Length: 100
Image (cartoon, rainbow, N blue to C red; front, side, top):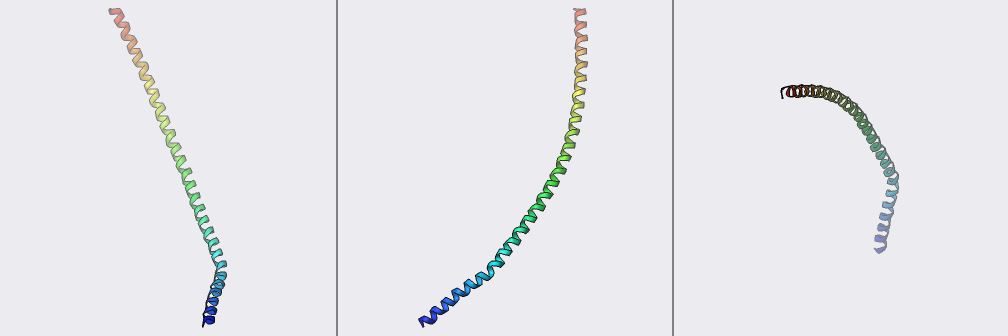
């Protein structure tokens, strides 16, 4: 009985190892296929993100250029206002000197 039990256990262990050897190639190829699939997906998503970032950067650049133009116009108007105020102050001081 012990021999029979030993033989069954031995056959079971050897059978498991044989099955594992058969599956090893399948596991390796499945892993490689999964690895390639994940890499391809990540690459495509990276390209999409990169392309979208370029579009966003161009749009942001155009908006910034427009804002800079508006700021330049406002600065020019403020300069003109400052010159007018200086002229008014100068004229008022002249009148004060003539009166005083």
